[in-house]
Each structure stands twice: as structure tokens, then as C-alpha cells.
Image (cartoon, rainbow, N blue to C red; front, side):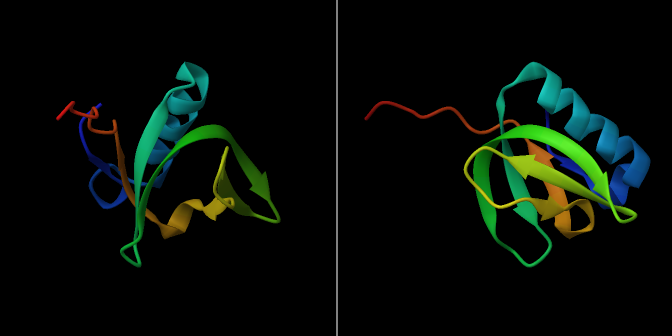
Length: 79
């Protein structure tokens, strides 16, 4: 998965990408609109009170609207 920006693909297609990441069970690199980045496994995408949320293994759930982009994390290189 290359870097996929929500602004480039639109909200519906972006949610499809997130749901695929849930199915694959692999970690994703997440970039939030406020600038924070992290790598975590996406466990679920859910709708609650009309808003969609991404649920992660180690991080708090995040409103989909706050996510700017996702990508496959860079592999850790041995020194």
C-alpha cells in the first residue's frame, strides 16, 4: 500500500482502504491532520452517532475525518 490520502481518494474510498487494513490485520502508518503520526494495527471501523471511527490496538480510536493519510509502515532496517 502506498500513501493514500483521504483528500485525494474521498471519504468513502478511504473508509474502504481502512476496512481492507482491518481484514489484512497488518499495521498501518497513520498521519493525522494535526500532524501526529503513528503505526498501529487497525482493529475495526465503526459508525457511532453518524460519525465513523478507526479503532486501533494501542491508540485511542480516531474519527475518520481526523485522519489525513495511511500507508504501509516502513520496514525496520538493521544497523
